[in-house]
Length: 192
Image (cartoon, rainbow, N blue to C red; front, side):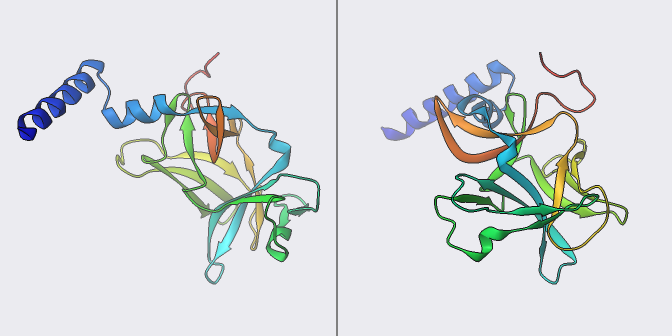
């Protein structure tokens, strides 16, 4: 008896998704979570070396309280970041977001975390944070942030115009996950 009911439910879900014209996963991601503003002065985006330092990944550090500094930034083009939080128990003082579990890409109402990955790429003249499509190579790769010059070690990444940090929100509850956010796709007019 359970089998016909499961088939009926599966058909109903498929029909509802088809009627909306949106894939069910995209519809769910865009509607379940929203994005809430953050005080961006409390965050720093970093190109953090991995392995022997030839490659880097995105880290985002957040200063939650004034108990002690979580990071120090010095210089410019590129600015060097000293991740002070690595030298003490930062519980309750700092947050560290080091991979896709802690941050993802969002454009407008669409959470693109499963369709884009954020990758740090050294170009020789700069270090860029790119949003790279994971499923559909015909989708555009977007430059999200730049260091402002070449270098090694922990370097600050500066968001390109139109991009900002926001926090994932479920209903009225803000969550720990961060969005690298933009109102609309680059090249399209920003939402009002």
